Image 1 (cartoon, one colour):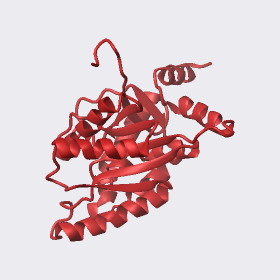
Image 2 (cartoon, one colour; image 1 turned 90 degrees about the vertical axis):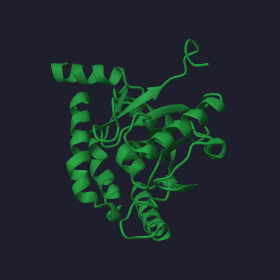
Image 3 (cartoon, one colour; image 1 turned 60 degrees about the vertical axis):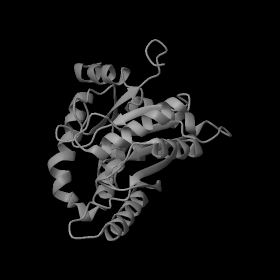
Image 4 (cartoon, one colour; image 1 turned 30 degrees about the horizontal axis):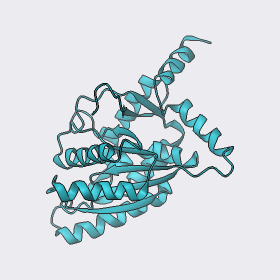
Amino acid sequence: MDRRQMLKVAGAAVAGVSAFGLQAIANDAQGAGNSPRKKALIIGAHPDDPETGCGGTMILLRRAGYEVVSVYMTKGEGGIVGKSHDEAAAIRTQEAKRACEVLQVRPVFMTQIDGVSEINKARYVEMRELIAKESPDIVFTHWPIDSHPDHRVCSLLVYDAWRRLDYNFELYYFEVMSGTQTQLFQPTDYVDISDVAEQKRRACYCHESQNMAPLYEDWHIPMEKFRGLELRCPAAEAFIHLRRDKNYIF
């Protein structure tokens, strides 16, 4: 084994859903027989957040036999200059549906409003009930230290649901536009998305109203390449796995 291979194995060893971990999941799924199908929820604040933060991993999990659901906390109501909330929501909902078709995943839309999302008792209940109804094995969402208030709201609502549902799913945080939005992100897990990066890009480009092409080129591709350098592969996505530990989570 040369130095490059040793480094890649070392990187994979610390990653719960690494490139090798996903291969193991795929092998298990192929031999699972009548075992129940597993489910992953990717919960983002806006249309395009699940795709940009987690699109490659979504594809790989689906290929591994998971049912993958892309959840949008808002419909992007405040995201198109010159459009009313209703007009923007209609446009961005269709863009999200097209992106989900590219990824071959199921979209779900929640009821918060882009730009004025809330944390209160009713919103805690809404998120908890949605997750309980879907009954996922894995949930991915925003890292809570983020410059966008909607991202912070989404993250904290999911975290509360994880606790109140007795930690009955694995919780991972993804990053979006690290440095300008996601802050202080130190990954615990990486996924090699080299083989599916182009499909992820096509899904993200469905969000035409967000001027996605230059945004993706300037921010998301460099982030994928940087995480790929850390994993020793052409392109990767990175995550923080929040584990329940009886010593400090009560």
